[in-house]
Image 1 (cartoon, one colour):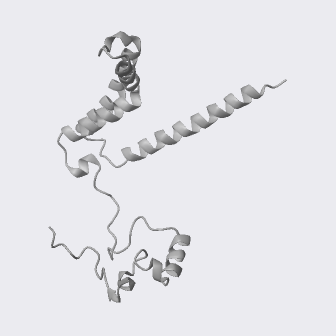
Image 2 (cartoon, rainbow, N blue to C red):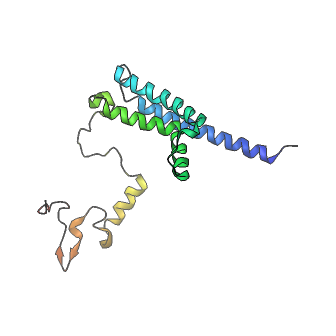
Image 3 (spheres, rainbow, N blue to C red):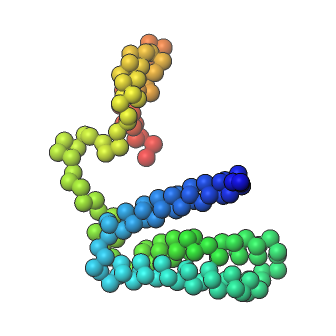
Length: 170
């Protein structure tokens, strides 16, 4: 006879496996933006992967090493310092921002060519939302929300002709 408990544990294991694979693939995707032939990036990547594993294992083996005097603070520090993912992220952030490198070396420059017109956005709204915007722009109550600020009026006078144009307070 098959147990429902085993089925539930198997499903939970599969969900965990798939979700961790997605997290790892997103992390590897971000590595494609940096130049891994540079010693700077190799050092940061290697230290960010291996040092947190060793540090987290040491913290788990030596919980008495954290003694602040407050049990709650000790428990919080133990939990945070025994997480290799958190330690790796913090170490990678610290090393990437403290070791000098150009924006291209750090992976901050996009390899995509710039738009010819410059007016198109990389992150555009879905088609349904764009269609809803086209329909709602003609409604007086949503004119300022959907990009027609000249339709907004107060006491018969138009306001907000150019959003952000009033910089007299600077």
